[in-house]
Length: 176
Image 1: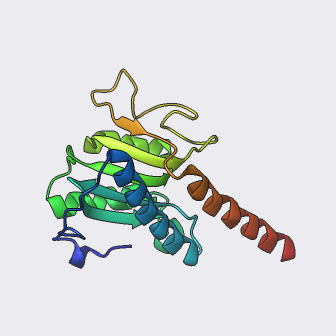
Image 2 (image 1 turned 180 degrees about the horizontal axis):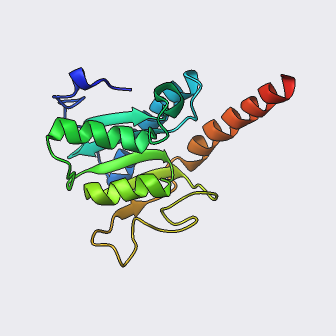
C-alpha cells in the first residue's frame, strides 16, 4: 500500500519507450505481477494493479482488504485512489490500468467513474469478472463511458499466482 504522504509525485518520472503496445503491455503486467506478490506475502489474495499515462508509472496498488479491514481495498481501487491524488483529479482520462485479475463489478464501476481510457488484465475471473467473463460493465452500452479492453496479457502467470495461493490456503485450512 502507498501512504498518502508519498502521493504528490508520480512513482516514476521516466517515460519508457517501447517498440509496440504489446511490448508495453507485457512490461507493465510484469510490474503488476510483482505487486500481486507483495499482496501474497502479506497474506492477501495476490492481485496487483497500476496506472500508467504516456508510458509513465503514475500509481500502483495491491489487494489489502484484510490489512485495512476495508472490503473495498482491491488492487484497482488502491491504484485509482493513489492516481487521483497524484493527478489532483478524480478523472483519469488518459490513463491505462493494468491488473493481474479481471476487475469485479465494484472495481469496474470505479474504472468507469474515473473515466480510465483503457484496461489491460491478465487472468479472467469466471466467478465475478465484470469485463466480459460474467458481465461487461466496462463496455456496457447504457453507460456514458466505455473502456478499451485488452485481455489475457501474461494470463498463465497471472492465473498461476492465484491458483497456487488458493491451493496453499486450502491446504492450510485442512491442516488446522
